[in-house]
Amino acid sequence: MNRKSCPALLLGPVFKVLAEPNRLRILCALGTECRPVTDIIHATALPQTNVSFHLRILREAGLVRAERRGAFIYYCLPDPELLAILQSLQLWVTSNAPSPDLLNREDPNNENVSLSNRRANSCG
Amino acid sequence: MNRKSCPALLLGPVFKVLAEPNRLRILCALGTECRPVTDIIHATALPQTNVSFHLRILREAGLVRAERRGAFIYYCLPDPELLAILQSLQLWVTSNAPSPDLLNREDPNNENVSLSNRRANSCG
DNA sequence: AAATTATATGCGTCATAACTAATATAAGTC
DNA sequence: GACTTATATTAGTTATGACGCATATAATTT
Image (cartoon, rainbow over all chains, first blue to last red; front, top):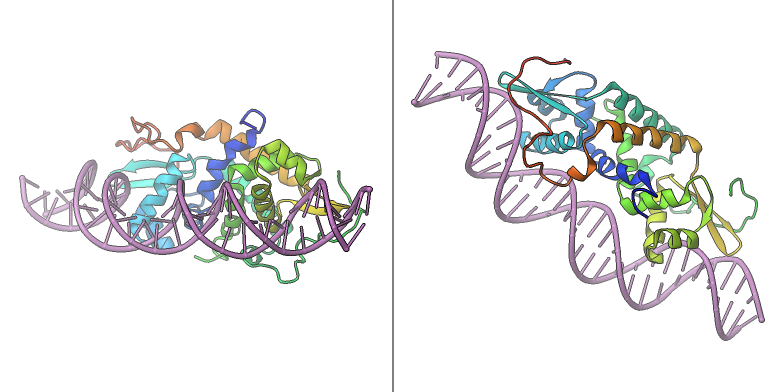
């Protein structure tokens, strides 16, 4: 099963970049504005070296654009479209996915997924 | 910067789940159909234990639904909406992001991101 | 109920990614 | 050119996640 038969594989690297909470916070701190790294450092309260580390990853994934203005380097989202897509996904998650706090816990009653015998079904 | 000030943080766990290529292949193998685990094993050529491992993670993230039918457990996507969102993101990636093959390599000329001095800009 | 098929789980190992500290580069100011 | 500010990089450490093996559970068939 290669990329041809599963084009979604293209999304893997992007998802990997977006999976890191601190990177999401950086994107959040950017919003629709362009901001210098210093601002991001203050907004996220992350150490400078760590912000720079994550910015590089975001940059190489094409998820932020960087441009120098004098001594500062401003970062911003490349495209409002991206923001819209992420927001629709966010909407889907909040309305459809299980409580995200449960993701890392075992649900004691295994109620998330009932594997008990029932033939009635809505798909397939 | 908590969830209130950055609701995108909710997406972190979902992205983490979607970042794994084999999980994307499993979703791909499912498509819009419901299929038993055996089918997924054959389609992906992954070892059973590995498929089961990934299915659990997908399940707990709410990205697939499971239902038993006799001896088989059928898995399927919970919602066509999800597929649509992922496809729009995929479209964005293919048209806007840098070549994904470059993501894991250092680009030798550093052409991905020009940090050279230029004051002209389109944002901020 | 024994055997078979379908699927899940626990554990150990290995690879990868995040983080820290120290240092380097690059631009601006005096 | 020396000094300061802004940002990036490198190396080392730690944490996390994927995978494989062995085994467990659950339903089906005989």
